[in-house]
Length: 552
Image (cartoon, rainbow, N blue to C red; front, top):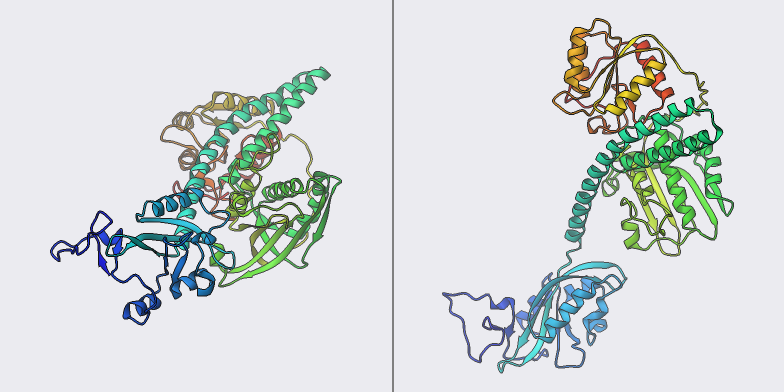
């Protein structure tokens, strides 16, 4: 073969100087003998032995069919030479092949020019692959086109890696945004729900009580929504403890049945003697509930939802699933619904992505479950196919030994009171005023500061302060963590209770024992009373130094 000039169509006898190497071979080529009958040359041998898939098509024949395909192309696609010859390349296309890319390829062929692109093709067994393809025209000595040459390259692994990287970047950006919104929203909900609680205790009218109860219910639903946002962003503060997963599912079964309705039956398939798992019970129940609601919505005509547990051991296959080798406990929810096509399943855990109609869901259910499972050092997996149902699997690291059955805990709704002095530090005026009103109604003396610097001044001049109750995220150079550390250096016996809507420094890398006492927002008066009294009764707890990892 000889190279043509940059224009694409060579002039007979044209040659290229060795002093000025041409790049025209990237666009077209010229041959003197267009036939394919003599295949005994070294060039044919090289083409057959190369690992680069290659084909030739003949645009002089109707539909531009394949007239030659080397062995590498046969290996790539799974088709034999006999199945390839005489067919147009479009048979490699499938349902997810880009129509725009196909149109670009057709236009390049019509204009007899080279093109390099990537297209999603399908092998003989139906499996998709990303094909990095270069197509260029081949001319004879008279300048007439005789073939199109196409080289291929399977670039699936690179495309998948790039897509995963972009997805991770997008999810991280969304996670940071949603976590910030949830933090600010929790401060607002603290003011709304707290003042509603105070108002309900102050009014006697039955109608006013009903209206306030409706408003309080809406605020509670808002708090649940922000919790889902934080769980998606993996910034929810977890309180993990060792749990018996079978006992939890059994206790939750009644809630599941009432939620799913009469047209959906719940079947349990629980493996006995499971190892314990160390997870946050409330978040697990919320994740399970969200998965069950999705299963119900996938079966509008009713059906059976199966909740199962099993022990899973990962060794060499752990890395492919993004988990270290070891023992895991699987919690699975399988439905008999419509299933999801691959492009929907790929996006199922994205926040606000939903195939339901308007008003039928926030699109946060699976996103919250996915975030919670990841934060618990596990993995959420989706297996689904159209008309074949869906199975959601939540994998959690197994703990040592078998899990013991849980005993129900009785809690008395009694407000715990006191007469100690509490220093309240909160940058939000409304939240600070609410905390003061809560505490004073419980009998406590209250000193208030709007930031860390003001709180340190109060600690220096006031003699009696029995407890520091501080927000974590505050403006200025002294946040709640730094304030707590400095306060305990000044007063080693001073107990500390922190509060937050969310704080990234407090997010656990995984299940661990809390190293500090933190009350999440929005909190109720009874919760505050319990935690204040418990902190005072327990006394000072050493604080980790700022910058050290904080778990909770």
